[in-house]
Length: 316
Image 1 (cartoon, rainbow, N blue to C red):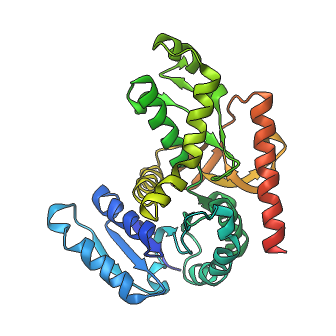
Image 2: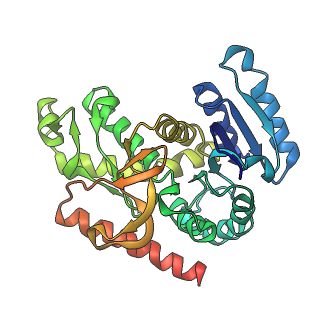
């Protein structure tokens, strides 16, 4: 039996997201070893070399291209492998292509590593998280997706811009699908403990309905707008991957809106979607119930139903 190395990460898929994540993790100093795996060995080797050449300016880490057997002792396996989202294509349009890729990738991972954490980043992340959980047979706490961690960061950023306040002082979640049916959970949003509506008025903003709708739409359409302008999004999600890995490696027990299989809260189960969860060295420890109003709860249930329909189409 191979002993897990808590300072080792594997990245499967070296496209824009995988290589940007590798770069972010190298700079973070979280890991002492990072192995890159890609269908194209040359691509993995090129990315590893390019990043490794900057190591004299960073903390020590061994970064290299490898094969699946090299992940046997990795504590975190980050799966970014999949076809990219094209302009005009929704995340759910990617489903069948990427489920097919996962059907070849996940068995290869579990052949060599049965004790690490599977962090799914490829899109559509909720469908692929559920797929990875079913294909791997791993306990559900050790298979989860990046979910709406980036969407929530976008929400905090835009609220910070709107209110002219540090986005790190904004506490707000996007929940549900990482995609078109996602929900900004306004009921629980606050700025350093001050309810959002109250803080908005303190800053001279009174058109709450119009402003929150515009900001939620902006969050939802952020990826589409970036893809239209530069063909892909990768820096924001790479920083999200780094943040999730921090919570795991340092056993921070941070509350992050990762995508995990639901167990019945809000009447939702047997589907992966994002809800705030405590994340530490064992993965998802527990979900964190947040205050939702009736409309938000119904929207969350609709988001779950949307994802379930897709799952039935592709997995049956």
